Length: 181
Image (cartoon, rainbow, N blue to C red):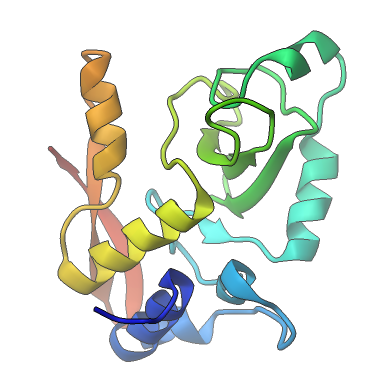
């Protein structure tokens, strides 16, 4: 068992196994924790690139929608058709979709969900926390096992089917391949 934090394990894995992805990390020298992964293309399933702290603030301001303040009272982990002030984008797809942390109060506060440009936040929680997301990605990279297994279990409880993703490296670049679980 390693004493490294998940983001450190990810960086080490990228440096060794996906050097072209590693070279694209654009995090400033003073970045800490998960922000040290900013710019790594397609780092999170399904092809999300981590944002820097500055990019996250900019995107949050751009996406935020204050028209429906009553939605702010819904608990974390629930659906929303508006990008709320409590949503903090942490990764972008480049096509208008985002991974975000849901900062609303409630049992799922801090969970990671997906914001779709066309549908909003209509899916279920992907990870219970950023730490869980990073640990899941690190485990998947290190073992080749699928990421998002916890999401699959939650979907099964609702009688839904979702894909899991396995890492693949081609020409030094990381990508994720969808597989049914």
